[in-house]
Image (spheres, rainbow, N blue to C red):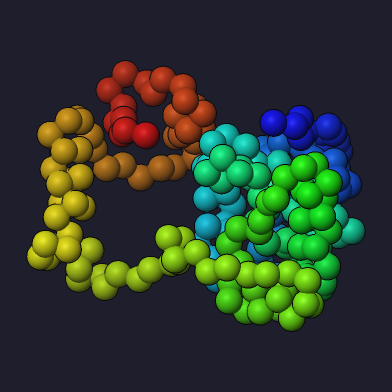
Length: 199
């Protein structure tokens, strides 16, 4: 795999595309600010989700002429989330994909909405494929409360296994708990007596 992080964030500035910096918590305001103007329809496009998976997905961040670019690895393939904070999303997508091809990789943009895909395809040189495995879904509140019927067997079994396997407690996370939460999410050891859960 090619080395990706060639530049680092300094003084709160993002590196200019095609340089990238590893995502870290200091990028929260940039990402949340961009998402606040976008009102994303994709459930994975929020800072908590992006940051929670940043090590697994090897998330990198860059600025492409004002567009915020998030570069990730998904199922062993390098790709981008849809560009944020841009008036010309199709042009930004094209630039990102051309750069990936120059690196010898096919690449793709992960998480486009139907509307975003239609705009990209309308340019004539981009193709959009539906990914039903990653379609968002909606549950009825009562179904999640009661988990009725065979449809929810797997979820009930998961809960039973967790309850049998772990000594746990529900607790509100207040600011005093944040160091422990950050340590836990980074793979550190939780304090003695703290609840733990399987990865």
